[in-house]
Length: 607
Image: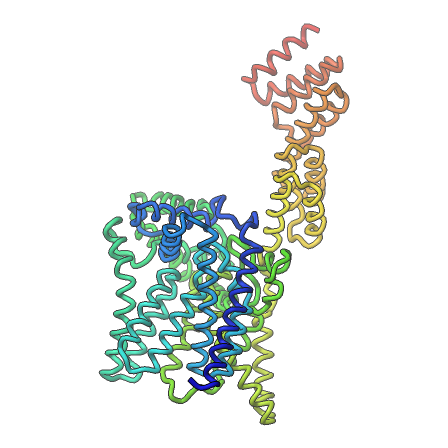
């Protein structure tokens, strides 16, 4: 090997080592974070439980069709079998695969654009914080960068070779990606079709058959399992119909919004989607029948409102290429800005990769000997459309960033060459294109990036842990920028109440009620806290103060029999029997079968 080749390998190893160290640092910083644990019914909780079920011997995972994409479940299960269900081991494997993805981006860019572009693309991929963040989570998105990079690398390699085995391998890698991201099937199927037809020849058909064969080889066991255990031919998973309806209904806004009657978690969706669909249809439904019901409902809305549906789809397509973090379960915006981690430094993201990447993929010159480029590059528009057809979240669109890293590396080299050669016309055209793409990528759609919700959850956790000063300090910092400050105060007030801090709870709930006096849940929560405070004050001998709190409680919650009864008791203790009898009578009017109120009233009438 030449000295240049040795230096190149050493440089590649250095880049990968730097990427691995950065990912390991973020893992060390976030592994024990209280809000990132797989619990509380979040998606990560479900994936971990299913993986442990499989690792425990139930590899078919029950008797229903897959409702979640199965690849990540079995990936976790395999790691659990080897490591004794270690979550840290699973995350460690994920960051190793993420590092491999950086290497695959480098190799793919080299194949299309050469070594200089490859180094830049690899460095950009290593510095893309959203990749690293997802790789330290227990979600299917943790392996998306690797699976996408692997599929794109193997396809690029196959397109540059005449060996059919390369197309089989590329098809198998596409199958793995589809098992994790079912909407990637649109591009996989399109790639097979385009490969067979462009150009039309026997060689093209053989290549397409090899690619399709590899795809089928991976997906067939999944479909056969669904058939065997559920009696239905479902290719990957059965949740497509509900997701399609989430993204296409009269209330849809392009992001995830829960459907009335269906809980916003995986297990709730499985249960409630079936209940809603069967109630509407008036008969029992299979998993595919439930999915089909929601597909039909969405289709009916689209057919009945074509203009609104078209506008919504175009908005979703714009979201796919926007820099905002559309969080689902976890907010990357919060962990990259609020938490003191290396993610603050790994600042590359859609804001940069979208304009640079699209420019590079469109105009940067490619190696002339490497064929099939447009079939490979079609991943970007086809995958974006497949996401926009449903609803958009940051982790669903993340695979798009892999080829955009490739295109960004090419764009940087192309622009550098234009500057060096003083090609003014190219530079002006490129600057205009970058400006337009940059504005589109960073356009403020006023979408929720989940940062406020994550801050709220952190404050509540601090309260639960008894770290009240820290909770109050974070609350003070969060309140001015929170989109719903009354809701923030309400939730934190309830947390203080549950932690046995009634005075702090009352103060916060009163502030919340002043901010939004029309919100009934705030009024009711404050009434309950005041009632408990009044009872506690009375029990401690401070009857007058207790009566004052209970009067406020019944003013806020006049339909609470217990508040009226407690107030009657306190007035009796103060010797104010007439007022006590009036309050006891009110409690009985609200609840005629209230034995405590009846007993107290009889006692008071004897005085």
